[in-house]
Length: 416
Length: 91
Image 1 (cartoon, each protein chain N blue to C red):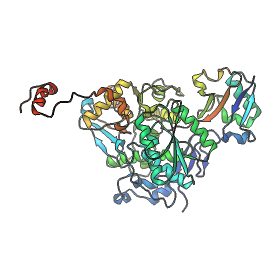
Image 2 (tube, rainbow over the protein chains, first blue to last red; image 1 turned 90 degrees about the horizontal axis):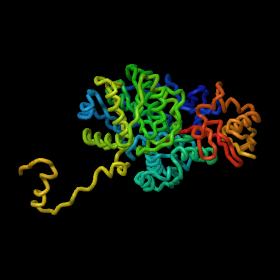
Image 3 (cartoon, helix red, strand yellow; image 1 turned 45 degrees about the horizontal axis):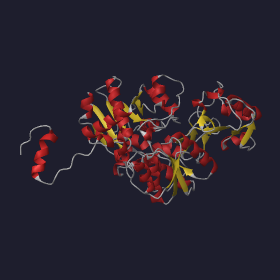
Image 4 (cartoon, chains in turn green, orange; image 1 turned 30 degrees about the vertical axis):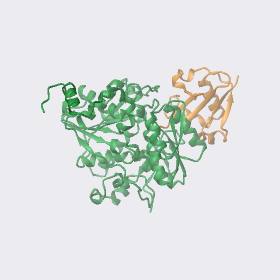
């Protein structure tokens, strides 16, 4: 069967066959997977999904998967949770959290992108795979690489949180800690991909990798009853996810699976690494790279390659971008956990905190349907908040000891 | 004085396969101009119609992106390496 997907340059439009390459040889702009949508329209109908399991593979026709591909794990299919308390606290009625903090198997949305990247790694015959990573991606590549029998090498900034390094090492991946920030690691990986025949998921396999993010968007639309939201708030690191959610919504509208709708895209960054938000707020034609300095390590990309596209999307959609400080990130992590029972990593704190700020600014209206994208789990970044939760004094296992402290602890008189 | 300009594989079809060239340039701008003067076919791949370095091409002086060093006017010293690297993100 003829393949319905191919590569296309996002700037000059030049078309390429399916190859492990991420940039156009003419203008160096990123390549993206494009589809024969008329063929897609014939091959799958919305009703076909009724009998498929709720995970990312239910949208297989929309993904760049080689003929005969069989998924090895149920990835994605995460909850969309209607806010019960935090939205009310913000004065907004229709807030939803798309919770990829519980994405299978490594608790971040990176499981989705690695799934499509490894399908293409196999297709192109790579035995050695890897990535440059701020942590979550390394976890995902290591886990799926182990399960699928790849030889996995990951490259991370040397000062990455110990939990994220451990969560990668445990799968048997080879870890290369690089003295430098993520942008240095990324540059090195670009040179490695240039010199060695390795499948680096976010370098030479990047077009295929990035498509996996679309499933976060398809799920949002389906979970809203095949409707698009008014607003989406998305954390931005490299700036890819926000664009892929937009692409997912466009595709669904193009195929008639949802009513077309003008969705506003809002980007969230940490103030300590906010090149895209800064570009939006200062209305820059080109964003200015920054040296990251924030606890939101998974968003600490000072030179985001998809930044120009994110900037354009946010502007054209009528959205906005905001950033919050490290103390505000910690407050937002706690607020999200205390009100919604969702323990997000620092990036989730950024997204939740920025959402509150956007509502306060009046950029997100109280009646609008707003989806807040939580992309990683708080268990991975406990270091960031540990100091806020000192151990309480231990007491003897006797009822008298309990009675002695109970009033003190609960701050009110307590009756048995 | 001599500096080295390193050329990524994707550009080498315009440089007859040459991976690096030596140059006597004293600024990054001069180095890029020297490179594109030697290999004119490379010119439009390095700069856009406005003469700016292409949006998705990053230029490094040794370990640092030139945008942190004042841009193309940044001076060069003997033994410096100028690298052209496509812009690729991850996370």
